[in-house]
Image 1 (cartoon, protein in one colour):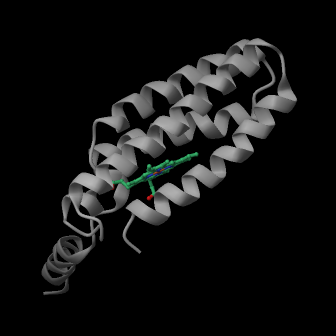
Image 2 (spheres, rainbow, N blue to C red):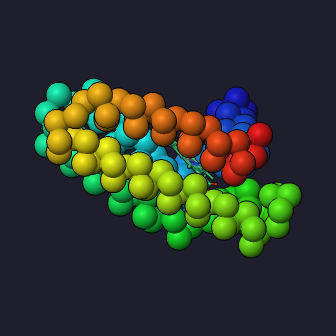
Image 3 (cartoon, protein in one colour):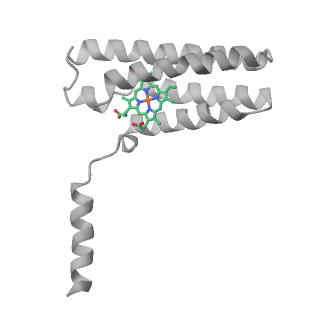
Length: 134
Ligand code: HEM
């Protein structure tokens, strides 16, 4: 009987567990972006840093044409159209900064890279605050 109960319990648990953010197409792009963003903070070689910045740009370009789950579900107080205009503005800001990070790597300007990487944290905080359900 115990042998039967365990799989049943496991299936029941799986069916009630919430879908995590990285299960969505946007969540996957954000994960790819995050991997490159994290790696570029530790990189020693500037050419490698510039390559990681380009990978992060690709993920943001794909994110630009996707819709946050929170907005899709009608959770944003401003409605879908205004929410998406704000979402795309913020993704575009992150993209611009990632292009500037690439240029800073290519100019061997590590101080500028650090400054921009730091500033991106605020962009993330704002974006996640507005577009991810608490
Ligand atoms: C440095 C900048 C950023 C990093 C490193 C980052 C990273 C991530 C990661 C790792 C996830 C998946 C797991 C989680 O929920 O934490 C995620 C999800 C998400 N991010 Fe970001 N993010 C950044 C900026 C932004 C910006 C600017 C926006 C919006 C304009 C945004 C919108 C979202 C949304 C909406 C999700 C949930 C996925 C969904 O709704 O389908 N992120 N982000």
